[in-house]
Length: 161
Image (cartoon, rainbow, N blue to C red; front, top):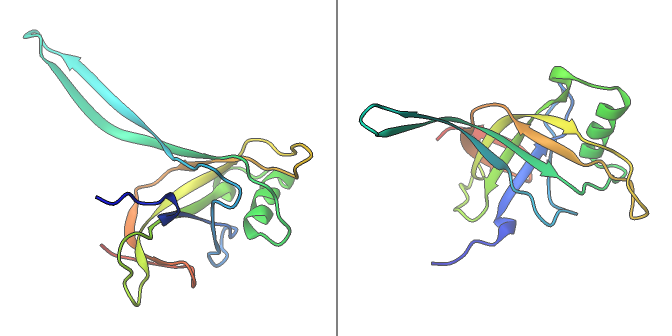
């Protein structure tokens, strides 16, 4: 079996503000790692026979983007800076993430197989040292993944299994 290189699992964040046309930006320029964490909600019960029943009822998923170096003209930087400057909360921090499987076969008219999910962007700090202005943030996944296809060149997601 052939191992898949990390660069073929692509993560795109919609940097557009609420009500604007989607503007997807690929994560990774300064990142050495991005690994969304899955925290499972597990319920265990033990009956009088000594048997244990385990039910996995869902996941809480989030990913930390650190470091994130601000770059002039980057739409994601503008979005994160607006969260800081305007003290945005609630739906103003909502976005979507598209995770694209670039190792799979591309559908000519639609792009690569992908999942899109609603997220909330949480800026965790800003500033940094002499290397440059940093805005580390956490991506909190909040919805159910929707399968489809994504074309990175056009930024278009097409829903459908």
